[in-house]
Every structure is written in C-alpha cells, then in structure tokens.
Amino acid sequence: MKADVELNLVHDGEQWIARGDALVAVGETLQDVDSNIGRALRDSGAFPRGSSVTVFMGFDFDTIPTWLRQYHTHYFNRYITVNL
Amino acid sequence: MAAVNRKWTDGMLHTEDWWAVWLGLIMFFAGLLTIWGVDLVGWMTKTKTWEWGKFWSDPSFNKLLAAAHTKEGQAYAGMGGFASLLVTYIVFTALTCIGAYFQKLDVKKFFMGFTCIFFITWGAWIIGHEAHFKALKTGQSITQAEIYGDNVFCTTKVNKCSAQINKALKGMGVDVMAGQVPTQEQAAAAVGKSKNAIRMSWGLQLGGGFSYMLALAVGLIIGNLFKGFAGFLKEGAKPEWFIKTAIVYLGIKLGLMSMKAAGFALELALAGAAATFVAYLLFWPIVYWMGRKLFRLRRDASAVLSSGISICGVSASIATAGAIRAKPILPIAVSMLIVVFAMIELVILPTFYATVAPGQPIVNGAAMGMTVKTDGADAAAGAILDEMMVANHYRTTGETWEADWILSAAILTKIWIDVFIGVWAFVLALIWVYKVERRPDQDHVGASEIWFRFPKFVIGYFIAWLTYVAIAVWFPDAIKAASSGAGVVQSPMRKMMFMLTFVAIGVITDFSKLKGMGRLTVLYAIALFIVIAPIAYFVAWIFHHGMMPPIAQAG
Image (cartoon, rainbow over all chains, first blue to last red; front, side, top):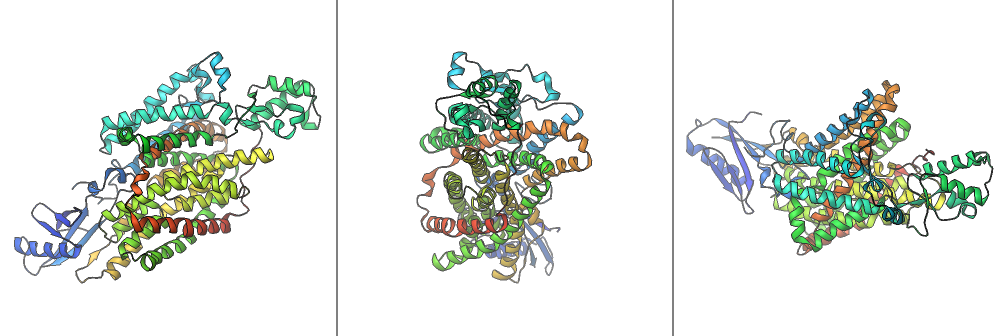
C-alpha cells in the first residue's frame, strides 16, 4: 500500500511517539497518536481540506533491547487513513 | 527509516534469522561439492574419544582432535588436530564476524566474546570426550561379559567396535556371526587387535550428552557467578543464531536419514505437524483463560503471556504483542521469564523424560519440542535427550538406536510451531484491530505481517532437507558422494554449533532476573508445569506412540 506520509513509531516507556520529517505526534495510546496526527496534518496545510491521507507507521525495531532481537525481528507496522 | 520492515526482502542482510540461513547454506553448498570430487569442508575439526592415561603417556593434540576430511579431501589428511582447530576457528570467526557486522553488532566486542566462547566450547567438548566419561561398553562386554570381561569400552561407535572385534575373531577362525563362541583367550586377543576397543577399570558411559551438559554447566556458572565476564562475552553469545544455523545443518542430517528411511521421516514430519496443531488449539485458550480469570491480568498481558508460554516463546510473545499493538515493555518482561524458564526446562526435562518413559523415545522428543519454549533450549534439550536415551537403551539392551531421530522429533514439532506463529499473529491482529479495539478511523493489517514474522531459518532447513531427498530420488548414483561432504557439515559442524549454543545459552541466562516478576512468574510456572507439559506429552503420545528410531546397522 502506498502511503502519503511515512512515520517512524517508537514507545519510550510511557507514550507512543510517531515521528516524520515534518511532524511529531505523541500519545499514551495509539488512538491518541492517530488523533494527534490528524490534527498535525490539518495544521500543516500540506494536504487540502476534505482529502483522505494514508499514513504509514513503521515500528523502529532498533528500540527493542539488543539481547531480544535475536529471537524475533519484527514488531508491527500500521496504516491509518486520516480524513482531513 | 531505521529498522523498519517494509519490503519482503527487508532484513535479509541485517537479521540473525537470515544470517542463520546464510551460514547454514554456505556450508551446505560447500558440503555438496563432494559430488564433483571437491572437499571444501574437510578442514573441520572433530573430537576424538581419548583416555587420560594414554594421553599423558605421550601428549598430542592429534589424540584429541582430527580433521574431518572426506575421501575426496585427502589433502587435509596431513593436517594435525591443532591445525584443523585453528582453521575451524578462523573460518567460523570470519563468517560470524561478517554476520555481526551486517547485523550492526559491535564487531570488536563480538570478536572477543566469540573467541572466548569458541575456545571454552572446545575445552568442554574435549573434556567431555574423555573415555571414562563418554565411552560406552562394547556389545560383547554387555551381553557376554563372562567371555570378554565387563570392562571393554569403545572409543568410536559401538557397532563399529563390535564389528572390529568380530572381524579379529574371524581372522582367528572363530566366526561369531555363524554362532561360534570364542574362548576367553581368543576374546582377549581380539579385543587387543581392535583399533577402538580399550579396557578401563571404570566408566560412566554418558555418551556424547556429557559434553553438552558440561558446556551448559560451564555457561551457567559464568552467567550466574561471573557476571562481569558474562557481560564481556555477551556480544558474542548468540544462542538463537548458533542454534538456527545448527538446525539448517540438521536439515542435511534429516535429508541423509530420509535417504535411508524416507517413510519414517515423512511420518515423523506429518505427526509433528498434526500434534503441534492440536496442542496449539488447547494451550492458548487455557492459558489465556487462566491469565484473565485466575490471575486478573489485562487482556493484552494475558494474550502475550499465553502466546509466549503456549506457542514458541520469545518469538511468539513479540509477535503477539506486535499483532495486538501492545506496549513493547510487555513482551520484554515476558521474554525474560521465557528465557529463564526455558533453561530450567532444559536442565530438568531430558533426564525426567528419559527416566520416566525410557521406551518412548520419539514421544519424548516430540513432547520436548512442544514444551520447551525457545529454539535454542529445545534443540539443546532434544540433543541431550537423544544422546541420553540412545546410550541408556544400549546399556540396558545392547541394541543401538540410530542417533538423531529423537532430536529430529523435538526439532520438527518446534519448527511447525515456529511456522504457525506468523499465521497465529496475523489472526490475532485481525481480531484485535477489527473486533477488540475496533475504531472508525481504521488501522489496516497487511498480510505481509505473516511473512515478516515467518522464521526464515526454516527455509534453510527445508532447502537442505529436500535437496538431499531430491538427490536420493533423481540422482541415486550421487548419494554416496553427496553423503560424504554432508557428513562433515551435519556432524562435527552441527555439533559444534550445538556446543556453542550450550555455552552461550548458559552465559546469557541469569536466574536472578526472576526476582520481582510477581504474578507473571507464578502464572508462568503453573501453566508450564501443570498445563503445558502434561498436555504436550499426551498429544505427543497420541500422534507418536509406537514410533521407534531405526536400529543402527553395524559399521
């Protein structure tokens, strides 16, 4: 699936952080992150109002402890669609 | 974007799982070249069974080690034991350091750690091969002790030793295969002529399993009593990488075994798949229910723990946590439990199964595969069980089971579990995204997640296995030449990777990590020993009872 916006997703122990070239969205739950992404996209004006934006969030596996990476190499990726 | 899987090829150069495939296939292809008369693996060192007194009468590395060259590799014949150990070290250090570089490990630390682990491993392996620990009595010494004496031990495969003695007797005009019985003097002379029979006043007859247990003990002592040194070794202690590489080599072994007993190998593979599927459907819901109802865990914690304990350990807990979008700290905590408990299982279960059910070798192996929750610990436990049961059976009956079938049963059930985890995580992801946490702003789950979670080393295992099956079916004339190089890769090389795993798994296991894990630890222990282990054994029995390893032929 092709995405309009690509973000790097991590969890810092307390909250999820989605970070891209032009925006950062944080939230205690992924739902909060999604809402904040929508808000940031609207504020940025990069996409016209009423458009539908596909956002890709790839979990950065480098944030998993090194000793654990030998057992598995993937956490999750997610796509959301934000209606501006 | 750093360390994000997007394309299907992502991770091929950067993950340990793929590097197990590459290391496995490099040696697999090198071994295959004996078909064309080229031996590229004959430098590999192999251990020899040695006796303390004889060694010190004239110390030499050649009494401990030898190059494992094939008929095609006579160039290696002049290579001494020490030289072949050095070449083995150089080749494997170079290959693993290249892998470490691409995996973005600290190559210098990896090199130092791997070097120490390599030589600790070989030290343990050599000690484990001392005849008083390892050597088994010859068949004649077990069944006709009044003629041969009960103190004749064998420094190679017992069938080979027995055949040497019988051949020497035939040379004296006593054909035991035709029913003739030698005198005590003739028997003593024949034992003296046998290249591999020795007399010793005592022997523990522990077989090759003793080396594994010794390596594990050394690793555990370092990991728990010398934590500073363990920290120094940690970058080079990669048990999952070592064991996955060994499992690819084991695919070659299974291929060779399939050439001899294709029907049994297929039956074992299918029974393992069926047993795994049934066990899956029982384990997960029971443990999930226990977590939710008895231990009042949150839904996500219960799901992650259920997968970790009932499916394939760390890998499953990470896959499940990812599938249900749990915070990463959850699988990390569960993984600590899994790694430590897998070690406890590895120490307890082989002896327990071998003692309680000595007549059910394949059932025991399959049950091991469904009970021990990391690939490293499962393969290690399967290897100990195999050595232990083959040696025990020989000691009590004089009959030799072919080695590695019990280990193969343990690996096959585990591999099916590993394969299923991708599908299971995908199903959980669908349930979580579209039902449990259903929202109008839609989070899509791609089928690519199945591939990202698929254990890649399994590909190497099946390539190796099926290639040898294909050779047997389509090029039967090449079997002998193919087996020659394969023998080096699947035996000394595979066993070295097992031994490295034993030391490394001990080094990274720190039992003090269980402190402070509270309810999760209690639930894990109860679920593992009261639910998983008995059900696994029952299911393994249903699908594998009556299956026995083939009897080894005299060499």
